[in-house]
Length: 397
Ligand code: 3PG
Ligand code: MG
Image (cartoon, rainbow, N blue to C red):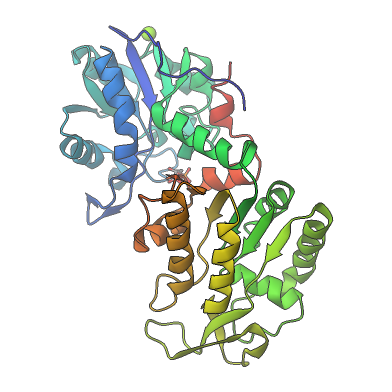
C-alpha cells in the first residue's frame, strides 16, 4: 500500500478542509436508522475543527445519477448528524458554485458544513476534471475519510485528491490499518470465512484469498455450489449448478497452494424458507429432494470453532446461513461468539466487513468484540479481491 499523509501534524488553522465522508446511511421513514457511518467520521470532523479549520463535508447519498432527486437530499442527514453528534452543521444546497462558497464564507474557523449530494452532478461519477476543479476551488486541503467509497473513481474520491494536498482521515486510516493487518502482513495462521448466497459475485475474492490464507471457510448458500461440485445432492437448496466446474477449479487451486478449504459436513435443513419452519440437522449426504440447506450444522460449527482457535487472524465476509430468519442464524452466531471470545482473550485479530456481515454480527451481539468491523460493502469486497482502490491510491504520495 502506498504511503499516505494523515492528520498528524497537518496545519489546518484558518484553512478550508474538504472532507469526503460516506453519509450514504440507511434511512427508514425519512429518519436515519443506523448512525455507525456518522459516528465513524466524527473523530476526523472534530479533530479538524479543533485544529481551527473550516470543515466542509462532501458525500453522496443514494444513486441519483446526475439529477436532483429530492428524496436523495442530504439535508435530513445533516440534521440527524448535527443532533446525534451535538454539533452545529450548516447545510449547503449545492456542493459547488456560489451557494457552496457563501456557506463556507459564513463559517467560522472550527465550523462545520455539509454540502448537498455530490451525485446530483453528473461530473461526480464521471470523475470529471471540470467538476473536480469546481470542488477544489472551495477548499485548501482535501481529506478522504470514506474508505467505503474508495472503490469508486469519482470526482470527490479520486480526481479531487490530485488537485489539493490530500490526506487520509482517521476513519480511513483505521480501515487501512485494520485491513492490512488482516491480509497484507497478518499473523498466521489466517482463516477467512466467506459466506453469502452466491459464488458468482465472489469468484475473484475466492481466487485471491486462497493465495493468501491458510484456511478458507465457505459457508452460506455458496457452500451448496461447492458441495454440489463435490457430488453431494443438495436437494432444493440454492445452488449455482452451472458453476460446478469453477468451484472444482477453486478447490484444486486451493490444494495446489496449500490452503485448506472448510465445507460443512452437516447442515440444518427445512422444506420452507420461513421463520420457525420445521427443521432437522443431518449430514449433508442426507438432504432430501425437497429440503433446503439453511444453516451450518452444529457438528460443523463445533469443528469450525476449534479450527478458529488454532488461528491468529480472521477475516470474515458473509454469513454462514439464513441468519435473518429464526432459527437459521445459529451457525453464524455460534462462530461469531467464538471469534469474539478469542479476540477478547487477545488470541485472535478479527476483521469483518460487508453489509450482511455487519448486521449478522450485530444480531449476534459481538459488534464491539471484534478487532475491527468495516462499514464498507463494495469497497471491502474489492479490497478482499486484492484490487487497488482508486480513492486510496489517489492518496498515495
Ligand atoms: C456504500 O454504501 O457501500 C457506499 O456508500 C458506496 O455506495 P455506491 O455503491 O452507491 O457507490
Ligand atoms: Mg481555494
